[in-house]
Length: 194
Image (cartoon, rainbow, N blue to C red):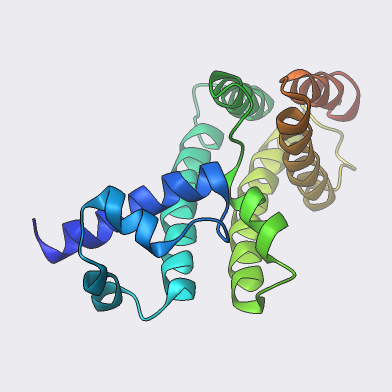
């Protein structure tokens, strides 16, 4: 296995373990055992657990941004249909995991934002990129007549991102996608109207 593959394995396995147990509860030894990598190798790839944590954030953020862009830029659907499809996929994914796993970025934000400024700043950058994609989609909805011409797309994008992350948290606590379903229904039935 190449050095790049080994590093990617450590980050991938670490991401899975962190998604289940949190960053603070996931030990380096646990990750390395599962990755079948000697302990000294960790410090070859990462100077410390913080650097590793940033790699985990970057991996998930990159994959998720690609997914968000693909869905929200899909010209075969109207902009609001794209947004709804994106949220419905998220609901199915959380439901498919029996509401035990949500958004890794949201989970890490709740766990680490008040503990580590480096993590907080990186997580905010990720959320901001997602918000920009939502705002861009809403801008197209507004110009296409799906939204009122007076709609503040940046404010709506912030509302959608914050509300969605909150709905995911509630789904995990409730062990039901019901909060996510309620968010989608209210968003498209009452908030995003022409």
